[in-house]
Length: 485
Image: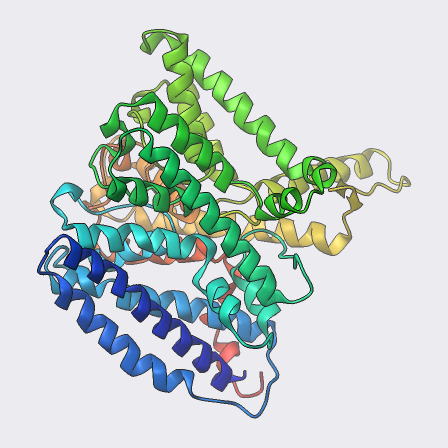
């Protein structure tokens, strides 16, 4: 373990977070709020600790996958620990565990909240709360890579943080890849801000909603989320961008360089379209009896489908009141998630497709033992290692889901007739970085009723889901820290 390089990168990330905190401080100044100390104190601490750590150098430039996984885990944990301080210092969220839960939910773009009334929050704290979505959406380490002077160990870090079964370079150098991805990310966000301004929405609200959508997080300035605006135009703009941010960013790059044929041949993109269209139609037909007409049913169905599959978790209506059939579809979308290489969470469409193809091939091998059956994905044959990797990831994901649900069931908050539904939807929502669930954690409710130990557990589950399991497992493995390793 090259600890000096790991410490150096963690230090750089801390400095970066300190700089990021200057933005909500500026918002407080603009709106004449006396909140600057709540950001100035953590910023000072981050810079005083981060700058010396970032100056630590190592003669040994070896940096492997293990270091990359550990670095990413430590960065996300440290950023969450410090990111919670502004809420506690100003008393917005006086309990540190609650503030930590809210911050982890922000950085991991989960959108689960313990706030019973978010509308009392100051503009500067609300900005920081939603800005964590924007930071976590593309990943803070990806941003660090974009400004690093060299590519030392960059690919290992990029792979550790990038969502999906595999991370690919768009160009020869990984830092240029990071810059391209961030440029696409920022441009899409700016376009959404402009479109929302056309609705008559204020600039502050347009920025917050766009940050929340870009990071596929779901935090909102209002208790009833996007339903507050009661605007078809606003809902459709946000729904379209939630859908777009759930697409692999490599597709956008291919479109930008004019390689349309390769972009639209993407098997994952086709599967994403098919799942969304199917879910929208099925839910619209199922909730038709509860709506004024088919177009209203289609409006709500399209918004909530894109919100859940992209794991944004924004709300335009109380989908917990929908028929069971629709809620089961939404639960499937929570598990499924967005495409690999997007800002969405969940298992990822690519893994789902590979898993289904692998299972079908396994069945064929049973019926035709002598046949050579090889599943294909994106026009290429899947090697056995890729098949096994996807199956192993799904198995570990399922084990974590079951264990987390069991531990959560010990909390008295979920006791009662619908406790099991609340437990299952809570853990699926948190590991999939979705946010709202059903029953006790439905879209009109929150996570404030959970005990402190449950909030810590769910915070870890959110981090495991966002970092896709292995970085957190490696970080807490005793073998990682042995000198022999």
